Image (cartoon, rainbow, N blue to C red; front, side, top):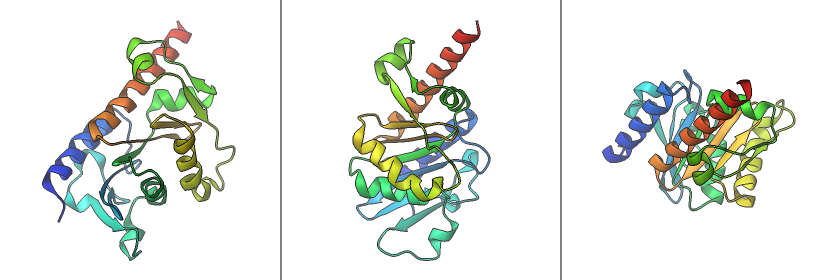
Length: 191
């Protein structure tokens, strides 16, 4: 049984991020640490605007059972983040369109708007180089990036972003601020 408060928090954030086009239909992931060795994550077939108890699964890192096969394709990345970053309470993978588009042709994102500048500062765009073995490398490369950089957001060229935080609302807020900053940079460059 899932804690009702936690379920409500995940539902609110997933619904909002879906309607902002940060999550797609069956595309994206959101999770919450539930103990030192377990976390709650969406299933592969989760619809982010309709997250409910059946859409989520609690996984124990000490015992891999059949549930791992029905969890999000990003599960290994979330697991590695939780194992290596004790400060991570919530993790998400999203593909906000403006931030993802901006990252495809830039090596860094330097917000020129007030909120982006104050809350995010300059972000390095991570280049995974090739995608044919990305999901094998991603758990380690993403976690190492977070260990080596103070940011809780990793913008990945051609892929989207991973974010983590101790507060789910703060995590979603940073993703929204990043998307708005990227949108303003793109609009300013096209003017």
